[in-house]
Amino acid sequence: MSFAHLAASSVGYTMPPLWRILTKSGYFVGLCGAIGATVTYVAAVRPALHAPGTETGDVTALRRRAAACLAWAGALLLVTGYFQLAARVARAGKGMPFGEALSPGRIWDFLHAPAGPGAWVAQGTLYLIQNIVLVLASAALLALFSPRAQRRPDALALIGLPLSLGVTLIAAVPATAPTAADRVLDLVFDQLHIIGGTVWLGGLALLALLSGARRLLSENAGVLWADLWRRFSLVALVCVGSVLVSGLWMTWKHVGTVGQLWTTTYGLFLLIKIVLVLGMVAAGGVNQFWLMPRIARARRSDATSSLLHLTLRHFPAVVWGEVALGVGVLAVVPFLSGSARSEAGSPPAVTTGSVLTAGAALTLTLAASLYATAKASDALSRRPTGRTPAPSASGHTITPTAG
Image (cartoon, rainbow, N blue to C red; front, side):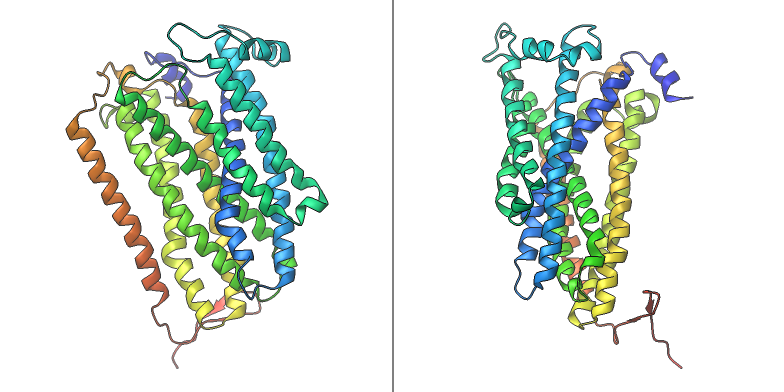
């Protein structure tokens, strides 16, 4: 049975229109570019470029390419943000065509609508503030199209980072004060999910794009990239933790039983998303347990050619696979409307002390497992392997054999 037929036969599920699918997916792509690129640049790229002993030519090439990526991320955020705002107008207009919602006049009326009963602020005012911050974040990054600014991207990235985070955080502020703790937890976990996911996917995309500058780099660039991948691996572990913890909360809220994952439309789309995310985690595990230890051993033994091949050939290939899976996740997100509980007629989730205790235990267990993952990867990198494999003329490693 196709998704369209299942959605049509499901009670409580409405298939989103095409404009809603494109604007929501596009908006999250824009957030990945702005939030993911700025956080990754500040947390991984910038400190790696400032590390002592890095060749000036390598720093210049990567800084220029990173500045261009950040600039395009600003342009992407501006365009996708505008279409997302128009989508909000169309949804608020009760049947308003999306083409009509693109009108600046319609958008202006939406942003200046009065506050509803019981609201401490008008919803339109919150969206107005959000989009002012969005324009400022985009402007900070767009400035990097200037050749003069490209020589100093650090300051503009540091300006764009909090502004980009503000875009999603401000949109989450409720116009009416939450009356239940559940609502507060929903908002917190939703933002953890968005920020963790956008940093993870946006950071992967940025580093994959930067790796395309390998022809401009020196033979010693492997050391720089080994440091860069190491720094981002720590960032990615934190992102994975936040995505999994928040994802567990949202799954419990919207799915009553395991069977609802394949008997409801919402559940099927969620199941697809889960499989794609687990694929990204598995690819990250390959990096953490296989590539990172090999990179560390090659760096320790001064195997320049092998290190360059691992950091700028093998590693980016796996990262591009993660990016493809992440794009698949963003394509599924617009279809996650409603809940499997409502489709199946199950009662809503009720937060109790035992539920919160179990959630805290799961969170601590996950944190411990991620810490153990980092320590295991470090232990594997310290394992002696004898002679370091030498790269062949084709760039592949040749392992010496006995006899």
